[in-house]
Amino acid sequence: MSNTSLSVSDAARPFRRPRPNVAQPERVVSVLIGTLLAYYGLRHRRSAVGLASSAVGGLMLERGVTGRCMAYSALGVDTATPRVVEVHEVMQLMKPRQEVYSFWRDLANLPRFMRHVRSVEPRAGGVSHWRVQVSPGPELGGDARIVDGHRGERISWRTTEEAEVDNAGEIRFVDMPAGRGTGIEVRITYQPPVGPIGTAAAHLLRGITAQQIREDLRRFKAVLEAGEAPTVDGQPSGRPRDREPVEESSTPERGDVAGRAGRATASAMREGGRS
Image (cartoon, rainbow, N blue to C red):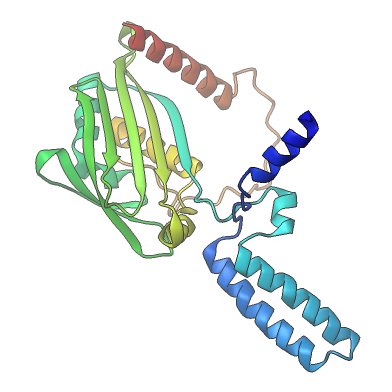
């Protein structure tokens, strides 16, 4: 009796259609290619090539109509879901906290070190209009609002509902111990909207990577500490030339030093958060 009840209950459950894993532009291309292959197969249905063409065309049509790709499922690939870019970075700057805060809070400074930001136009009510471009591609724009902030300590922002790309972030500022400048903790998230517009925006945002944003933050540090962002234009290529071998030094590697500095800054940020 219990088995019968279980079967009836299972049968009564609504059927859940698998979620698409193929982006809209790919689906359109799949339908076009599938139609051509199916047509060719029907015209040459008495040949092995025609039969194979019909089979492949049918699979392509199914891929385009349903938005599901068995190969993508097997490989864990999903081009239909907008890609989220998330960055969490901790950094130490040898500048006073108020100076670091004021530089970032002046939004017109952001294009100086953020390569994908073309312009930021402050407006009334804590709102600013952003223009972002990932080359190659058109500009994306939208308004952002400062949603939380404590002068000299924290700035939080989020784009408005009308923005083409959902962007949110927070930056915290703390004094490092022993007068060693300022520690900053940055969290930034880019989330394209859902639907065809989101798919197109996600394609453009592929040029914005977590690594690129980290490089932007390093330029922010350079602009504040040295007055200008570093550039490789005009510098030597760095290709090895014939020269005497150099003995290995016992000095710690730069990456090790940077890693220890980052851990020390993160520890200071945690202490600042508890205080």
